[in-house]
Image (cartoon, rainbow, N blue to C red):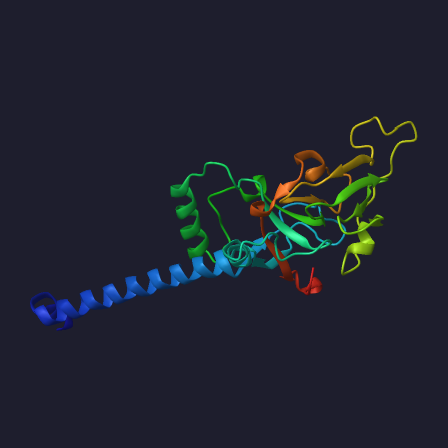
Length: 241
């Protein structure tokens, strides 16, 4: 009886079309809210590798606070910098500044939205990295035995990276063969460099892995897109990373 009413009743057909339209509008609204929250406030990210051992491991999931809104406010106020400190763990996007396939990005956003961020069309491990922020613009930095020393522009002496961090952390320091010296690449030493305006130095906690500013060079404020603030997986290690 209902099927016949729907087939021949204009009012019933109109009501069904309104239901479908409302459902589409609800999904579009949720999608828009999801993208606004992810872009400007908080998102979920998964660590894809073990370059941040021993503190962080592959498979760890984090809530990440975006730097987009603070950076936008700083640009409006014509001030410099990002809302993060030395020693913070940050999310780095090395694609920033490159030409991007916006169609693929939109499709990827839809896939991530529909799968609760379980799946992605883009291989994020190729351009998104979680690293530790060591030095800020104007800092003078050097490295010996994989430990960095930092002298800020306002200071007349340098301190180790651990003295400048607001929380303790313990990088994985590899053992260097006895015959190696400072002239061998990735020997654990680095000559002094001074960061220019808008430059930041990030490193892996696994100092044997050199996929960081030691090989890329300094990163810009635009490339630092967020900060993991809470690890919610695995349950055994829930808490601030």
